[in-house]
Length: 376
Image 1 (cartoon, helix red, strand yellow):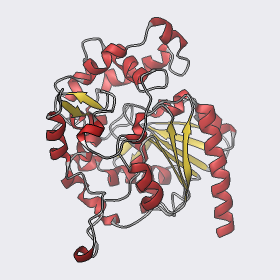
Image 2 (cartoon, one colour):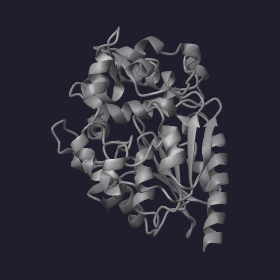
Image 3 (tube, one colour):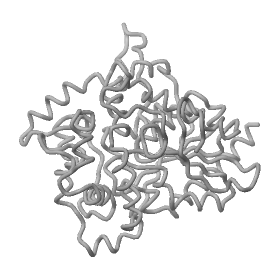
């Protein structure tokens, strides 16, 4: 436990700390994950010479100091405050900078804003499963140009109404996760928490044969309706009802080496203890334009450090925000080395294919450190 980090006591998993003066690798998880989600990757990076640190992020697991009630002040869960959490953790560990920064799912935008705000402390960044389309921009040269396509989520209400008008009526998962009812639905599902989590992890992995993702043409209701129901849900259904029909068979569970039953028990125990509201607060921030207005501080700013995007080939998350990958490559970053999609991986890349992920990360860091040396 690392105490006094931006108001938090942060629970971390780490390896490689026994040897002094190792470069720091910081791994930021997403939803509904934990530091534990990096368990297969941590030893790979430690064996390669890194001091590897994976925290339970604000709102998750054994990290404490956050308010997990629905009526909590949400400002502490803003992207910029979670960026400060990462910066505070690096400082608390006695480092001036990371050698490797990796963010998965909701950890991806946190990592992106780390690299945007403090390139001196975060001199490279790897984004996983959630492409970064850029910062919300103030309109520039308004008399003679179009506004930026990236806005602080002002179109949510219009999209919600349009999805609800589809046949059958649908609801975006982020909207559902922002509701007051979502925590109880996830925490106390009719099938039990263990069975719910098993189905949720399974249906978003490469193990579920229904995941055949492809880019969507535009963020229209008709295009978004092509997404699986765990992303664009049937209106009126809970997430536990949505994934229940896709629960894997006993044989499929036995064959799942990346998430064994004892490993899943860790998730069941942790979320059984904490509930999900702390983890859901970030979605509520994300869907509230007022709470994202501060991101316009970075209007027009790009990620100017070496960057890489890694997705699972069987993961729809790469395409949930239509056009985001193209914006990330052409507008949001200036030193992106590429987009890598890993075979036989869905959303949980670091669990499903840790060896392939480790190889990509180490190759990227070799190139990034060489560029850093040449620049110096």
